[in-house]
Length: 127
Image 1 (cartoon, rainbow, N blue to C red):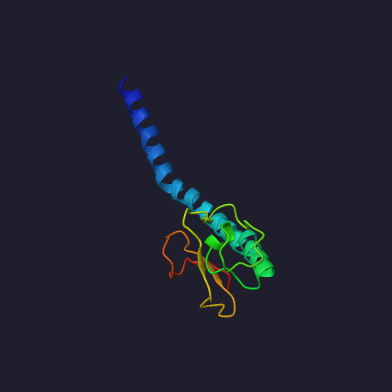
Image 2 (cartoon, one colour):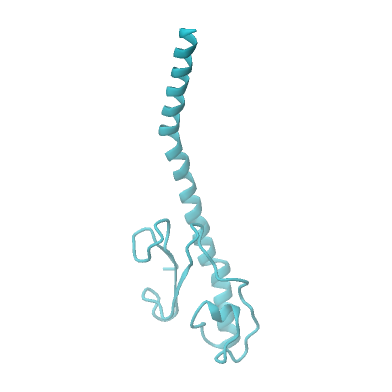
């Protein structure tokens, strides 16, 4: 009886150690793939929608909302260019700035990254 208690205690300790050692590493595997997904959004679908808007209307939109709903400024609007306002893989809204600080002749498109705060070193942008 006493030996089975010791065996269960050892199994419990091993499981706790495995959890402490391996779960943080498994969680960090997702982050790089999420960064790749954010870059793909920025350089892919969202960029395509912004470029198409500019092609149709002669300039980039003033906000993401202009890609979804027509405004009076859009003379040749053929949207919606996006179905909904995009969120990055961490659930944060992408930030669109026109003119851009990094791209003063066009726009900056930014994912605030895992910390959700714009202006930190984990931001992902189109520059």
